[in-house]
Image 1 (spheres, rainbow, N blue to C red):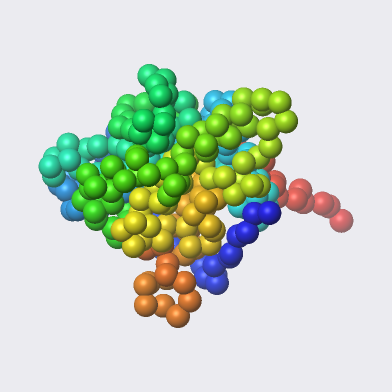
Image 2: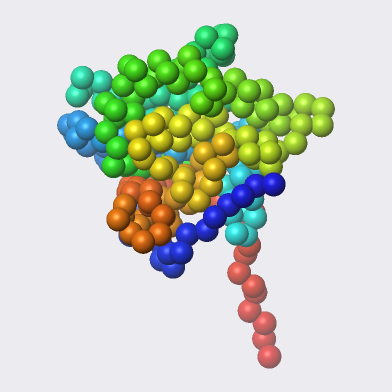
Length: 257
């Protein structure tokens, strides 16, 4: 059974703001408007919501994290940092890597990615950029990455890939992995790496069941500061653009008397 703990906050995080795309703007151009021009040392998360069948399956699976049971807006999360203070790097555990999986046990499926893979707003109509209070040189240090890649006991991304691809592809009797607390690989990786730096990314759910929707809910609702009475808070701020929603309840039609 999936255990979810709700936040006690009654209002959304005011440091999370809607920012629409400009006419004809790609996701890459949208991100460029919101990324800092120079490295400020903070780790950022890229959330995307895809429109293709695999993305749709992942979004539907996360409906249990939403009070109205509608599909999540999000299908993937990646870690963003600056290398040597200049070049932007993306780390991820994708379910559909462009160059194939290779042999995932060698690196626990944790690899460099490319922002251009998420550039097309038709493929990825939803995008968010979240800023954490954690330093990227701690979360993505050589030692932290080496430990994550070679100590699968912390989180076995290979096993998560096996479960999620089976579900997404409709193999046999594959069931929703989240119902068995098997998190989405990309989110489980982000959660584990941030936890190693003392940052609780998803306070309302077990790190084993982490998923993009749990991260989104943390950004929206778990905004209490570290010294608050209840919970550690996620300390997330950022911007988002949601252009595709699925299965949300429509307002009731007005009836004449």
